[in-house]
Length: 239
View 1 (tube, rainbow, N blue to C red):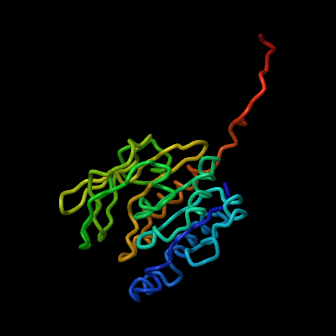
View 2 (tube, rainbow, N blue to C red; view 1 turned 120 degrees about the vertical axis):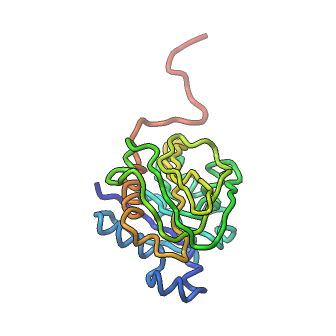
């Protein structure tokens, strides 16, 4: 199934940190869009620096799934754009926040919580366990995989209880984290995936690409039934 996927990235670290620019010469958004295009999707990119952050009304309306990477500039996203994304998710667009996209305005508004965590830099190993092996996002994976170097995220993770939890992470320092959380809001599906710190080449790892490819397919809009809101006339005559 070919989908229209917009990969959004704040594109800040790539401009300010030479090591990140060297690691991701086309930006994190470019690296993700490349493997999604290879998987057969119409993958386009958008960044914070573009007018309307690249997420104008027409672009969002044409997007089946929005993949979102952010970290240092979550506060710089215009409220109007954040609301546009939230409304699109409620209307059926898939949404996949990666790594610190958990702090993005759209995700926090959809969750209704702080989304706070504990964290630690240092390049320790992360082992992701598949805790829901029957979920389609886990297709093609073994029962676990490891990311050799990453930033640690630890519990408690201040989000609502996930509808389905696909992955739980363990870190070298001993912490654990709910690293693959599924939610349904309105007509839209959301998959929050923890990995993706910019200091490491995580988005080139086969298992990480497989998860994101599967998540895009899973989060694709379904036609469903029509919905009516607001003032409504009765279907039957009554006194």
